[in-house]
Length: 408
Ligand code: ASP
Ligand code: MG
Image (cartoon, rainbow, N blue to C red; front, side, top):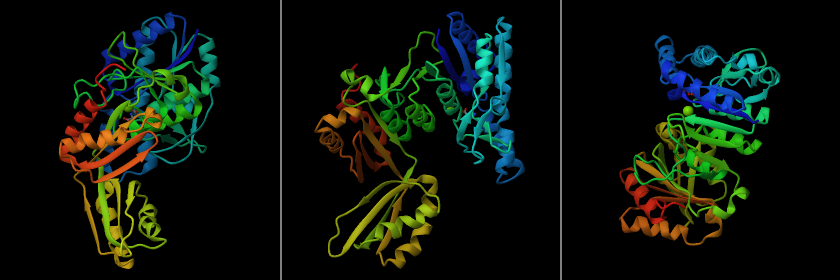
């Protein structure tokens, strides 16, 4: 008998039919002798609908009230799923985040889980109940309802699995796992049987938005066995997210090609090359709460250098505004920028032990005449910033160049 946490996303519970389907799947696992804790999202579209409704009333909705309201989406689905399970003759009981209690800090709309009280859940499980928990929500120490940020139900699932020391956390979604890249761009993209946590973090932060990134960090930290699989396919085994040391032998060199076109690039030209300049430029940007991703600075010549970095596209205009006075103050020549860029990354833990990955990537892009504007690397990834209009081409040729369509 295993203790399994299953999480079903919005599309998996998007209609009463879908909810009944989920109930039948949960029932099957229970019949096989397992204990089940099921975390659900709101019905698909519901969270967006609620957020839009709030904005009709208040242009910048009060965060506390927003969480009170937006958490109702999940409260609906836990009750409906419990009813569906009862209809199959099973005993089930639903819990909101505060009923569990999933204690969070008090950062409304992006709260972090501090502690989970698993006592009620354990008692119910031992009495044969299927426990259904609302994803995405918690309660702070003062009793206020909080939410965990968009996609937060994944984190609820993983956190519960960690707290309960579950045998596996299964995330059911509308894709049947993690792919070598987006199949809409490369039809030959392959589902990965396994991917390491570190690769998954790169893949999700770089745009393969299968899981909320925080849930992956959580799973890595607490060593939760995490699997992503489809709720629409009966026999899917999905993708297992592993630890590097578990699967070294079978590890392919490159696991996937990730991409992202949510960024913008800013360059400050003719910056005096002296100590403290990077801080003078990025200090005010950081103080304004803008996250900086790639940073590139040239070797200075004639006492001058160019300094480039990327920010989220929605922060682009604001960052330019912040930098204008800064550039004048440090006597830089000019601030330039562009938001028609894309970042494409080659990701794989096997890179650590293989030379020549970067040159293969650069040659492949050169052969297509794609100009690389920025490069950054880590032990397990190589990222390039290119013109947005070549993004799909770059993904396709890199996917082919690394033989990712071939089963590993
Ligand atoms: N319902 C929330 C959202 O749409 C949380 C989730 O689905 O994970 O972001
Ligand atoms: Mg989701």
